[in-house]
Image 1: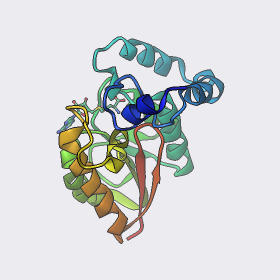
Image 2: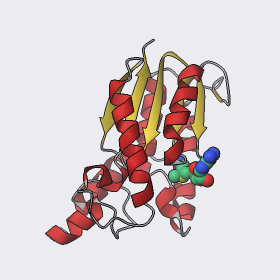
Image 3: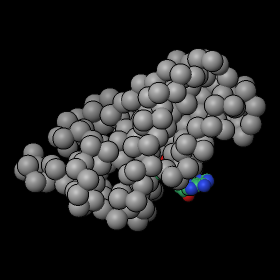
Image 4: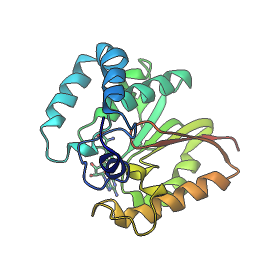
Length: 202
Ligand SMILES: C[S@@+](CC[C@H](N)C(=O)[O-])C[C@H]1O[C@@H](n2cnc3c(N)ncnc32)[C@H](O)[C@@H]1O
């Protein structure tokens, strides 16, 4: 278990680039991965995960537990048409694609059932405007990184990592916007770096 200073740094993304969870206990996260996630992970996803781990920017990849969540959401919503905005090595894209039925599609336009947004954080509000026009009523949008390494709750003068600092305000603005948007129901989950699920209702 990390000491108090290490935990604080980890939460605000100050130095611990390797983390893909906001859970305060690495042992607990490892337990989740090893008990419930890795044993059920598709072989192709496993391959992508292992190859991505060697990439210098591997922090960008969707973690396996979040991939499992995306897969479950696609199935629960009986999604057939899905879109992902922001593809790196494709872990989340493949997690979604494998969960679609045989006649399902990863789409670029049309009446979408499921959208996962994991791209440039300073554009999320623009994506929201556009994606709401594309997703059907009852459809689901997932915005990734909405806790932004825990920095959304950091004091204004906290010493944040270079890549965290400039985008923190945008993520906080998005969170506020989603919370008051009456066209959607929302649920923010502390999975991965935080994912906010938005169900279009009107
Ligand atoms: C955090 S990564 C996405 C990781 C992805 N979930 C995965 O597991 O492969 C963000 C990706 O968004 C892409 N990106 C950034 N700005 C973008 C833009 N304006 N349009 C499309 N993609 C963008 C980046 O190139 C990067 O690959």
